[in-house]
Length: 177
Image (tube, rainbow, N blue to C red):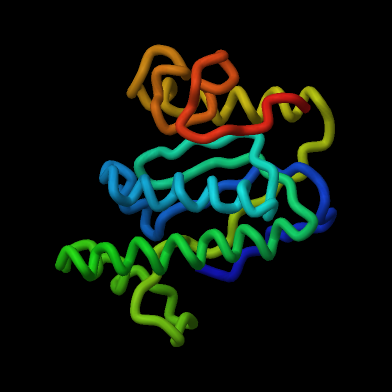
């Protein structure tokens, strides 16, 4: 796989982002691993590193709509921290099969590490207007429905669909845009 061509051009704009685990390995069926992602999303918000407008955590990828003064840097920090934390979790729990998968699917040019958790890049797309924002929020929230996991978006625990439906979510998001 080649290095990503997707770039953050307009830094302070809302962006739709996708972060995918290498080789689409299903890691987010584990509640401990999901907790790392949720805690990190919340940390980024609490420390004013970004505004989060929508998210969903699926079994091997996450979608976000976020905004920051330097979103490229912040998503890089998020991915770096979560990768290290999740790999450390697998080491501590001696889950060698998962670690072997992260080693096997590591890009050859990543010579500074033993494992790779996330695929390269986050495929940022600028949210250009209200209609695009609405379409991306619906896409994010309908991911678990389309996958057949739930019948209604707000039934998926690991999504901001609950927030948009007026139900308390696991983390707060900006619902006014």
